[in-house]
Image (tube, rainbow, N blue to C red; front, side):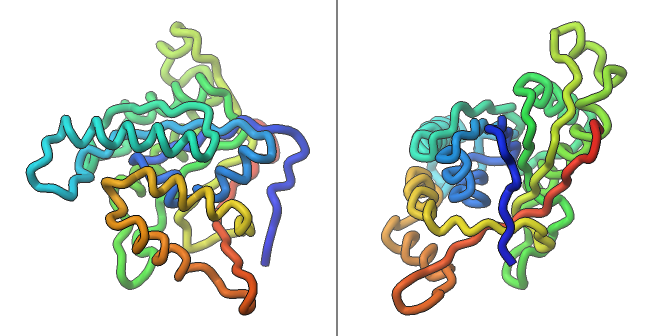
Length: 241
């Protein structure tokens, strides 16, 4: 069953995920759809992906440089307004209080109506894959930051002193979920997702084989057309949280 967002005004959308390339892999076509519709999309990435090495001779410094360049090129394809890195170590994310404070700071800084992360409860996406612990940690810390901390002035009082005032988002969208309640037909922007992912050349391998693999995952509606969907689990607050 297909749903639509239900928004009647342009939204400020903040995507908070673990690694460079996570936004493009998890919801790249949706990001392009939102930007095309006039919404503003920004990223906060908890790491710079310093464990994403395909070559054993690469140093962490080399990987960090490569992945930052790739991510900056990818957001140009999708029309994303900015990306901020929190510089935690890739692979070692723990949703502790310090990380929660940093996410609260970002939420208060950017004042988004819509926050996007990933579903922390999704440990086994399918029988061939264990969800990366960083993905789950990112989803958990974002949910913990949204409620109750981001909108409550009594949490992390030093943020108030720094000018980061409480903020109540309208909705939270969780990507990479096995329990979706929002399914978007994003066939029209699939090409943008693939183009953005190709900018992450250090991660995808042969670009021709990668694109072929991506298209093999698309549902064939009939011989002449295809359909591509991205799925989310959502929380829509009825009143300020």
